[in-house]
Length: 71
Image 1 (spheres, rainbow, N blue to C red):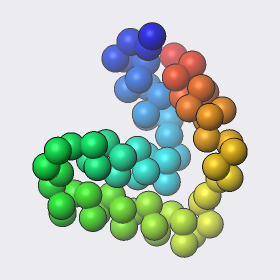
Image 2 (cartoon, rainbow, N blue to C red; image 1 turned 90 degrees about the vertical axis):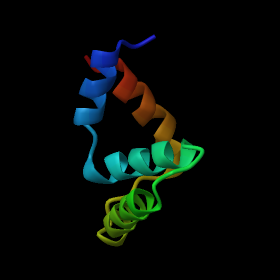
Image 3 (cartoon, rainbow, N blue to C red; image 1 turned 135 degrees about the vertical axis):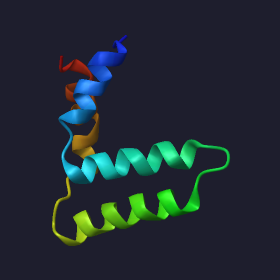
């Protein structure tokens, strides 16, 4: 299990698109998300997609393992 500092470090190393997607996922998990924050996170994610900053879904498990393994 990762420590809080390891998680913070991994998040700090995320690419902008990955950070936007993580933010959108976390906000979506809230029972009552702030709709403005959620829309802003989704807009950032979609802007990254439009700019071509995407990865195949097959790479996601390896990315997550890498994020969790960074210290």
